[in-house]
Length: 438
Image 1 (cartoon, one colour):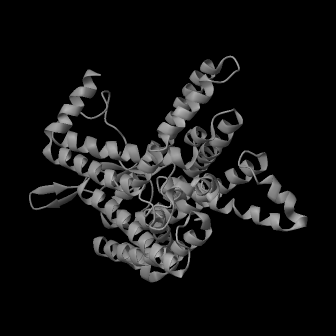
Image 2: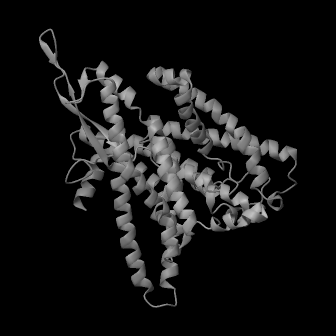
Image 3: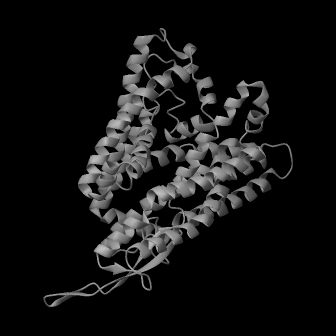
């Protein structure tokens, strides 16, 4: 406790860090207040059914990413999901179109151009998702004064403006605050649900008529602790590849000649495989419209059914390899290494280095994908064991991985400021190792 208090004092002594944390907290407060501002013309007291419709499946995922604003018919209902969708599309275009591949190689100028393209694509996606949300999610009886074209047009404009404002808040947090702004906004929406889930779970276990409710609650928290530890290990785990840089003598000074490491992440794909897999798991429900295939729809109707979890886990493994292939480019890494005079000891530069890195990524991604699939289906196991649906979502899946990953990244940035000012880091026994640090 003394070490923690001392760390807080050190954070307060650094004016820049203190200002950044305060600025981040202020923008987070603005975002959370906006999540409860209901669209004009919508009756706030008649949204109970809408909230029930946004509790499971892909719609539940959207509601989670928006911090509950999706189910509240808020001005921030669409949140940052359109921006995330646009970012994924731009990344995929970089694999197939030479123009986008060229932008990826242009450094900072190329990144700015890709960000601008992403923003335009976000607006296009909002033009589609805004009316779709109003037609499919907001029930007619919750609308005051009719749901005609005028209401849909005005509400679509408000939803677009709200989503762009949330995106702007994320960019401001990135530039003038602490951490990745978009990720922090998503994480805050997830963490906001945690107190309610804990209260519901504790109340359910302590008021149960069966004996041993309190004991089961303690065992449940112990298991949750180990699940959190496993998720942290998955997020932080890397395979270090040694890289030697050749010596260069310029004038009277010597450059290079040092050994560094390339940290290849065990889980380079993050939470994207789970998101993609959850989206695809909605398609079997379409078979319920036909008499001959209703059995298939019934087998996938519950996320706790065996067939659902088997297929879901396999999809997570497949998408882990797919998304890792998109985000990690061994050929580009080998070329950059060669340009800077670096080489892997015992491996020829160029094509052989790219093949070596690709082989390592294939080997480390295999256990990472299985571990990610296990974490993805953990909420189903928790629900089957009698844990409340709300709290079961924090036993794995997207919620847990985003929460752990963003918190570690934010703590790593705070620790970098402390170490730069010659203060002790956040960890007493050593430096905090985040996803991008080694």
